[in-house]
Amino acid sequence: MTIESRFRLVPMRPRDPAEEGRTASTLELFFDLVFVVAVSIAAVSLHHALTDGHVLEGLLNYGIVFFGIWWA
Image (cartoon, rainbow, N blue to C red; front, side):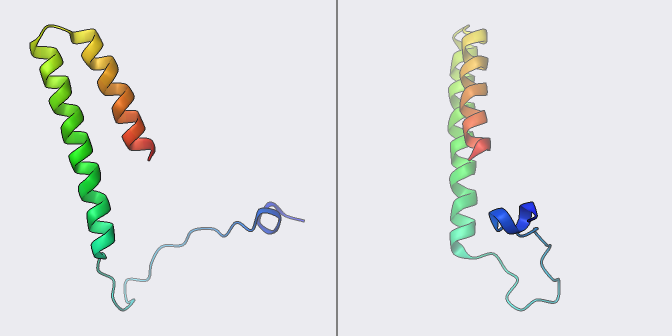
């Protein structure tokens, strides 16, 4: 029994460039927009921390939040 058959894993394959309807759906675009807004809010928080002189705390908080956003 191979790993693929045991866990029913199917290798990812790229989409065919000639495929019909290859545009992004509105759900995909909304998902991307949510990520952009989340990173923007984290960046604003970092900016405020840096201007207040809390460099280490701001960088640490930004790193944790950005990691969480990126992981999602």
